[in-house]
Image 1: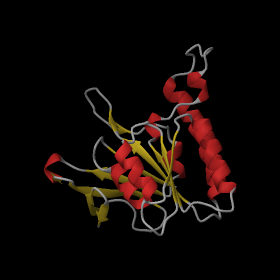
Image 2: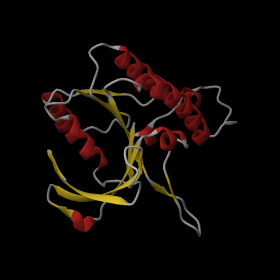
Image 3: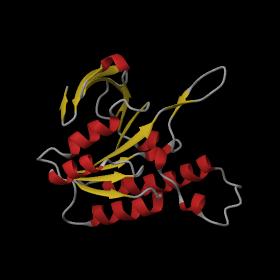
Amino acid sequence: ITEIYGMSAVGKSRFCKNICARPEIRALYIDTENSLPAEELRWLKDHGVDCISENVIESIWGVVSDVLDDDEHYDLIVVDSLAAMVSNVELAADNDQTMSTQLAQAKAMTMWMKQLIRKLNGSNTAFIFVNHKKISPGVVKSANTPGGASPKFYSSLRLDFKASKKDVKGSKQRVEVEIAKSRFSSRNTSVKIWLELDYHNVNV
C-alpha cells in the first residue's frame, strides 16, 4: 500500500494516471471525486485502464475485494482520492451527528485497511491511495491528511509531493517528492527525488 499525498495541484493524480497507462500494467483507477475530464477518461481507456466512479468507502471496498479475489488480478489499483471518500454512517438519514464526519471516516478506514492488508498479502497487486495535505488554521499551523491514522500506519510507502508555480512550464511540471515513510529500506525519510511530469509522461 502506497499513500501519495500533498497540497492541491502538485501532480499527484497526473503521476498516478501516467503509471496506470503504462503498457506493461493492468490497472484499475477509482475516481472518488467524480472529476475525471472526458478527454483523460478516453485516454486512460485507450491505454487499457479500467475506470469507475465511486466515493462510498464500503462500496469501494466491495469492488476492491471482488477484484482481489479474481484470478485475473490487476497489477495496480488507484483510489483518487481518500479525502473525497465518505462512509455509510455519514450518508445515513438517521445520523444524529453524534459521530463527527472525520471520526466516521476514520473508523470506516480502519476497518477497511485491516481487511485490505490481509487481502493484499501474498498478491501481486500494488495499491495506491491519493490523499490531500491540509494545513490546519490557528497560530501553530500543522499539516494533516484525511482518513485518520490507519492509512499512515498500514502504508508501506508514503510519498509527499511538493511543487511550486515556478516549476510549471506549459504541460510540464517539476515535482519534488519526499519519501516520508518506507518499509523497503533502512534509510528512511528525508530522501528526495525529482519528477518531471508531462501530460502523458513521467521522467525521474
